[in-house]
Picture 1 (cartoon, rainbow, N blue to C red):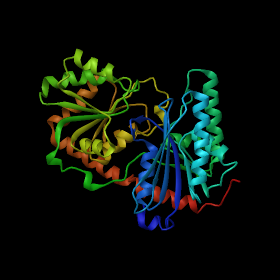
Picture 2: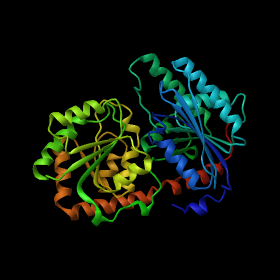
Picture 3: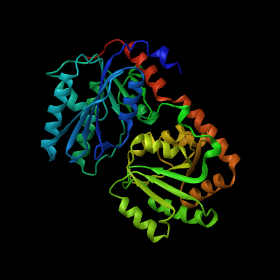
Picture 4: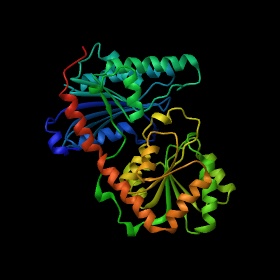
Length: 394
């Protein structure tokens, strides 16, 4: 990987518009692939217009303008509630932002719906120099209802054709794009890794290996039963062991009830949604990170877990379940363990708590891996390749 300085020589400074859907928690949003990209572009000296559209009916939109050497300019507005009204309002808002953004060198749409909005807006607004469709996830059966699933795939195929380049968060997703006919020179993997910052990594001697962390949007995609069962087993052999849960969501009350019923309320601490920097500081203090997914989410096979990437960037080894794009690397490179059930989770955590040498090896592997995938350097290299391509779409 080349250095950010050498690969980003073309950015002097350029302007990017990144449009995504986000989960709002008050004035904060859940950190995801678009936020990681935004941060890398800012670190590379780009002016970034970061436009967040709310999922469903959270009722707001936010455009944050980040310019080198200037304080963020945050523009918040309420959105109309109700599907057609909300989507219509979002389309008009995208048009306004595209007009206001000046000469755009790069436009990144982070899901099929935002790509649709920008494609429609492009009929009456300026055309950016480069358009990118950034697939944050994918699923053959994204929706249970056949008409909705067909619409999802139609929008996805249209977004692939619209983009000058297609980014996917994982190699399995890049393989799908190859099957869809995207040529190799325009098909990029853009992982959800953060920029590696050694200053954020805590010294090994200051970390309590029996302090565990789970950061997530608390939805049905997490295997809560596995967490409870393993923590109950671990409590019997590691009396000081505790789990920090960072995040919020509709399944939080269910998770809290399971903890109380198992007598684990004093060992599992719920912090709710935290600002990203605060969450990363807490993760850096922990000995192991959990990423335990249930089997009923069809997009896991193509995803690239933000939380796993963040754990590794802070030197926190991972215990995860199978079925997602990172599990093979976690096993093959010794970044942690891939487990199938609560017994496997307990065995992995108990080993790390008891044996510092085994834990240290996994930690060293995690840090080495994180440096190879540092987001700032990765984005700089991709942009250098992207802007050297001949124009291929009108």
